[in-house]
Image (tube, rainbow, N blue to C red):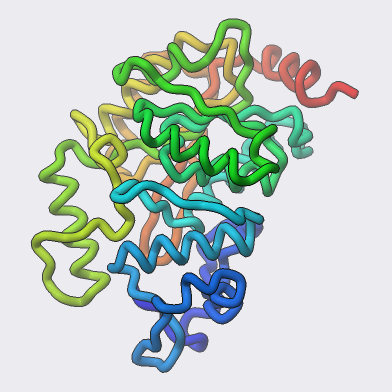
Length: 323
């Protein structure tokens, strides 16, 4: 969607209160910080500066500018046709997870240097680790089944010194596994995050993208260029989001004592019922559903733990509150 006028959309109230992207994009500031964005800035019908969100090159340059301005990323690039994530939404997930950890620690944010987050499907963009390490000082493990994506993520880490001590990338050697093969023996993870593949087939992904790009460009598009990019494994998997999340829940049972909170995004509300059923079957001790929203789009995070109250207290006292 094109930017609305300042009078119409001064901020995005559905975003988390700590999200740095609640206000309209300051394109003047962003182009000053990242001149590569300037050629993609135009005036909309309200005579306000905007970019064409149906243009993948414009979206990519906007991301470069946002990451530089708000997260100190001087060098960020991804291979052609890989997913370009919407930064405000990714930041929202991180902030909500921070609240979850805070609520699990007597209302006090755990020290950042004592929190390890596993990003399942870190992708070529490495955006979740960038935001989480910069905003909260967390350490990250980024896993992916795609060696090219991991090569790109590692290049971003190498090119931005503050990420070197904070982020480690690991190849998931078996596409059918989610945690096994990534979480090492005697390793403890405070929280896992995931943006699962949404669609159940490439045809479905193409149709969904055509509809989105048609809305953005205000004309019918039948053969879209992916405005946010995306490889097959980033956009779809057999059974789509519902099956992926169900598999994640079942496999999380193998790591009941290694992880405090598991979490994942759920894009479609109708997928919640199946997730809840899988969690009940897996004997999750506590399940939380956290609503999220950006503009007209709504989604949610579902988080679960297998730790009892006593085990959670032991985790807090031995990992987060040691001095």
